[in-house]
Length: 115
Length: 115
Image (tube, rainbow over all chains, first blue to last red; front, side, top):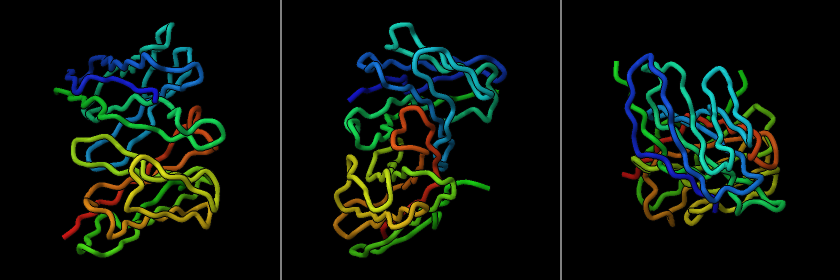
């Protein structure tokens, strides 16, 4: 399975940019990189996803390394509401070839925002 | 509003009893998923379904059963064979037959406690 590695936790100050790293050295050529975040006692929420090029949306930016073995989720100006667990996810290879593709979640990065 | 609804939010079960968790979506999504989350852990895939009347086991299917008789509904039954059922259960859906390039939507979860 294609796996991701993220730091267990990160801390940042309010109104400052946050860079959340993710390593995925075994990524395959057709794997998409997804980011989700989960607030306490809630279901995960989609943040952004990409394949090769950097992506921007209203929530965040996704910077993907040229070799695709790592990526960085960028929150341009963190607020207290951004405090959550952030998951970097790849498509699950086991479910390819006509079957289903499940999102496989690790433990993610617990982002702490200091006021 | 379109979305994915899980019920109930909290559920208590006596040991040895089966219990069914509800998941309904009005997003017209083909794919639906069930995950389990234990404290401080990531999400683990229980079952998924890509189309009506078809579903596949995920990583931890033992002690669980599902059905997909309607596109909108994907109920999960936690049977007495599940030895440690106390957990937070999350249902998700996505548009197409793969999730590689589409986002998944999650419900708000059901917290099951065995008493």
